[in-house]
Image (tube, rainbow, N blue to C red; front, side, top):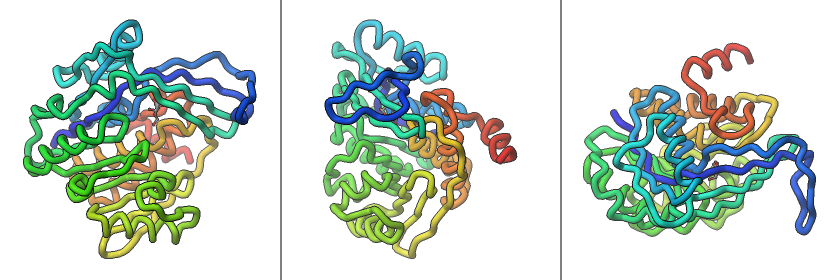
Amino acid sequence: MSIVVVGSIGIDFVAVAARLPKIGETVLATQPLHIGPGGKGFNQAAGVARLGGEVRFATKTGRGDLGRQARSFMELEGLLTPLATESDADNQVALIFVDDLGHNMISVTPGASADLLPPDVDNLGIVPGDILLAQLEIPVATVAAAARHAKNAGATVVLNPAPAAPLPEELLQLIDIATPNETELSMLTGLPTATTSEVVAAAERLVSMGVEEVVATVGSKGAIHVNRSGSTTYPSILVDAVDSTGAGDAFNAGLAVGLSRGLELGDAIRLGCRAGAYCVTKLGVLDGLGTMAQLDEFAVQL
Ligand code: RIB
């Protein structure tokens, strides 16, 4: 069973400071600038690869030094295949602020990611039993096209709707599993998600909109799974947070790898929670994408 990731690759510029800046404020960083690969698509594809999953990554890199860096990061993770094409635009970039408690603020300039268009996902080679894993840093039309191909091929469609964007009716009906965080769930449904019961109600709304299974990630509280039969909460592993960036991506990678190994959805969610908690303990996303051995050792230590 392969996991086909369709999404962005970016270069992350990370500034760590005692606290996040307020509007109009300048805050001095407490560590040297951290530069590494990012983009939700790359993070999820690399997360799958490090967990030993069989992965193919359809993405668009950009021109110049940043595009070259993006391609070399993909090569290092074994993700540079013909499904990765190039654009004349600048590569995607993310500017990230992280505070002492591991909270972050992120702004993304999509650049080449916006040029990943429906024809780019016409030949993903998806076969029955595969898993499509997509996010929303690329055009929604491209995600919808990939989901259509995946469904027609008999694959499972997992959408991490991040960053949140309005989803067309057709795409909602194609999603087997959606994995929003509380903010994205609120934006998708127009409902509040401040409490657990509000998250469950909003997830039920997303199910009524056509999504089969909703797995809402709720930060240090873990994940809440909702479908037509009810809801189940999966607690997270409590850790000292260094940087929460990419925790959602690690979660999605773990979930997809679990499903590809034939785990029940609940056990795949547990693996996702473990991968997400591990990620939060490292600065930058790449170091936070653990191998199965690292996740096993991490769980024993806690
Ligand atoms: O999910 C984390 C990612 O979001 C970062 O790596 C950054 O690139 C943004 O795309």
